[in-house]
Image (cartoon, rainbow, N blue to C red; front, side):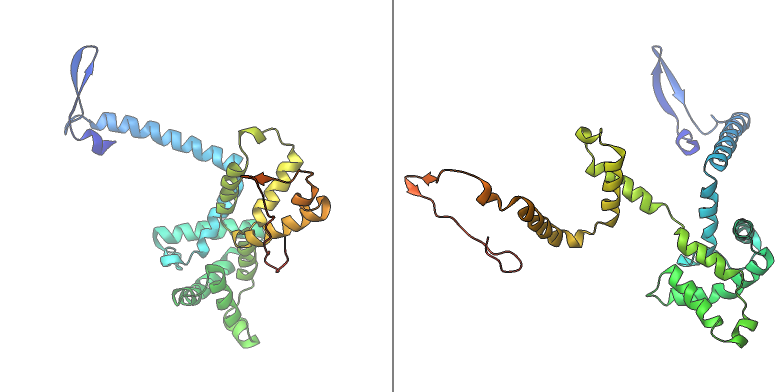
Length: 252
């Protein structure tokens, strides 16, 4: 908005031409008043998030394990270091870990995990697992590189997932599957559909379609055989029934 207002703009207001913006249009007093109002709004929003969505802070704290582009430094110094220390405190308090031990073990294992991740071919969780496996393979290694606090935190990180993207994708899939005329479905039906949408794999659609055809034929018979219709005559010539083979080579 400040960049927008740096350029003067003309507009009509109550039949008069007014000039909005310009290099000297924003005084320090106006800027301070607006920023103060915005900071109050941000503070209020943050308080609401913390009171109504406390788990969001926990998921955010799992950002300490981020390896992509090395965005999170492993040393707890500087501004990023203070953020790491805050996240480490949240995780330690939630899972009953010793904060000092957790930070020390984190700093020890982070370069190893980063190296595995940078070499490619592994996910963030796999990179951390390889790092821990390498330091815990013998008693001597465990003494040099302890991970008694790090392992429980990583276990929670793997279980929590650290992301809500799956839930968001499920909402989108549900929105596509449920139209206006299906809004009155019971909760049980909606729950069943959500489970099906979660487990559905597009690669299995063809096989599922054939299985559905077999189930239908088992309970209701083949569609052509159940219909009691008179023989069709097209252009005065009796139409010959056609057959086709399914994936298993059966004639239909």
